[in-house]
Amino acid sequence: MHYFDGGNSIGRFPLATNDSYINKQTNERVVNTEWHNIVVKNKLAEIFEKYAHKGDKVYLEGRLRTRKWTGDDGRDRYMTEVHVTEFTFLTPKSSKDQSAQPATGNTATPQTPTDTQKPENPDAKLPEDDLPF
Image (cartoon, rainbow, N blue to C red):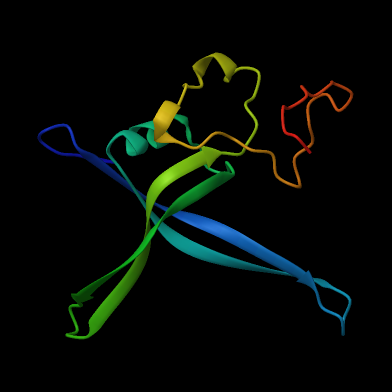
């Protein structure tokens, strides 16, 4: 994290994504890991610094930005970054961290379950909606 005069801040960190499939010829699972450069700014950066931990699963939305500079050897270098505009923590809260989690309000999207997440109580009744179909 870097803090600037005037209260602005920026955080940069790497994020890994995994893609896996079964090789049909060898019947083995193949996992490909790709690394991404993530940039968060101001209030989002402060929230991320306080509550995100190595290994946490997160959902990020943002814009791709490519930076160009000239290296020491005189060659042009490029780096593509994801400038985050919204995020959601997907890793469930542990019992010790429940009181420390913030109400993110407008700074992050609400958490929605994914196909890999199980509801806490599958027998709980869902409220009926007022949709006409």
